[in-house]
Length: 105
Image: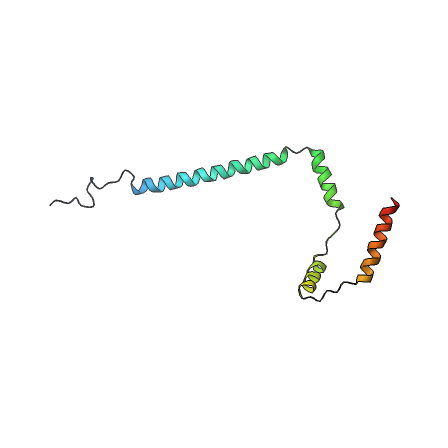
């Protein structure tokens, strides 16, 4: 029985090792090109927003109150530890004051 050896042309696959690497590089290149195209589309979408709208958004953001992150974390820790006590009388007074303010309008 004659079996072809490793260097025989009968065992050669349609794709050689270099073909596999080339195919992989081509797929990677296509993915990179698609990602770049998506990025260009995203940046184009941002430039499609009218300048006045962007200015209005910036103004709105600038008017937002500052958030004291340290205080938020401290309150969160107290709530989780069940150490945060709600002063019901103070809360009631504030709610009644808010309601009377709203009723005046």
